[in-house]
View 1 (spheres, rainbow, N blue to C red):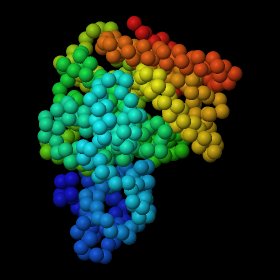
View 2 (view 1 turned 45 degrees about the horizontal axis):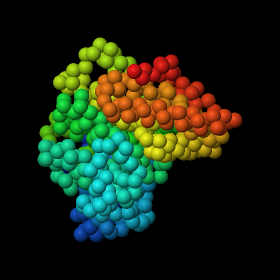
View 3 (view 1 turned 45 degrees about the vertical axis):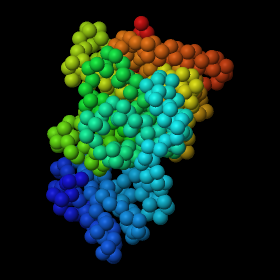
View 4 (view 1 turned 60 degrees about the vertical axis):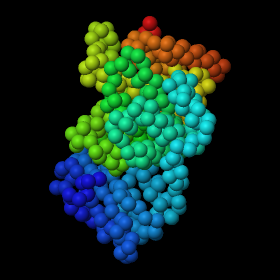
Length: 456
Ligand SMILES: [Zn+2]
């Protein structure tokens, strides 16, 4: 983080002055900072860090230690807690209490077991079982899979990446996902990254893609739900969460995932050897990709996609058009669960419902009004899945198949049809109960509802 040598030191026990926040940048702090109040000079030299901030991002300050030491610190944990978000705080609080966080350095080598290695040889298969891969890699599916894909696509060589920095970046990404979330965790991110890889290989796209496009796509896929709190945007808004205020109730989570990804990219120094201009371009294009995953904006993206396909004017030699298609590809990757085999798809359905119902339980407990799809008393997995498939997944994948009419597209649509039929069967069996999931999807975005999926 080269900014540290250029910027003034600001003790962390003092609020950041308004004039400082009015510009973009970073503040460095040294070991003499009041935050760490450490008496031992030998240890002092080991403590340096930085806060980066953004003028539009005043409450989301990112703190990073440049060098850690193993000694105990006398820390004002409260000062830090205010500045950290979700996962970062949980980890730091363990640190402050002296509890060792599981050491991730054990995955800093290529020593996956043979079976996981074997699986990676088929990483481009649509049947890839990410749950099994996660077990075989001891919970490190996101790191292992993404590193492998960087290698496979020749990105390490092309961009002259330091493999240790790449590993470190990926470990930080994986750790910033909340493993306690039933659905929005690192395994979902790994699954989306694997799906993205499958789409990047599609002939229509692959022949036009540049290494830069592939790099951004894989990073965006791996980070697209970073630090997800396991609740949705309406929950954050009604509980007056600071992120809702910060991002003005618009794409709150997606903005947070993007800014978190940027924080980790900068901290890792993975692209420190690139020009500032390229790094800024990368950050902004990753943002465009991640922001496209906001499901409430699906109708806008879908209309644009449909118009391009109707006019037949997509020109993949044009970087802007390619970028748009990558946004659509990431959107597909993000909601492709119902297009996987039944065995995989069913597991995802159970996990996402568990997360919804958990939110509903909290809303009930605190009398916040239960959000659509979140009431375990009135909803069923089958109802939720059928609504999800009908109003969100089918329309998107029907257009994707118009764009890239390959065996993969047909396979995905085939699974989608079969899975929907299975859930309809389950729905009939449970016909005595069940809420109105269709109406709930309507509440999410009424613009999406009236459009019948076009499967041809
Ligand atoms: Zn996602």
